[in-house]
Length: 89
Image (cartoon, rainbow, N blue to C red; front, side):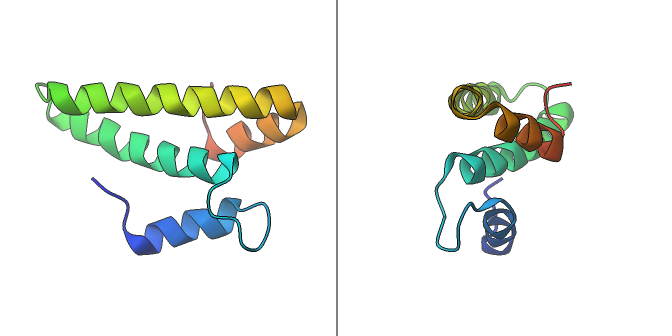
């Protein structure tokens, strides 16, 4: 379930704000979204995996908090990010 090093680098390079950025809210949201998508596929096949479901809900909550932070800080950046990730409708 964990992100591979190659996939993590792709996400960081695609969403980083500046050259040495590895932990901005944008990057964190992108990595959480990738993990959420993978875990959702796992849970569709394994419906009784309740511990993974709890982890999924925790990740969704963390992503929601980070998105709220970006939305409060910069509305245009928020709209661009959710459109780029394909989340929120």
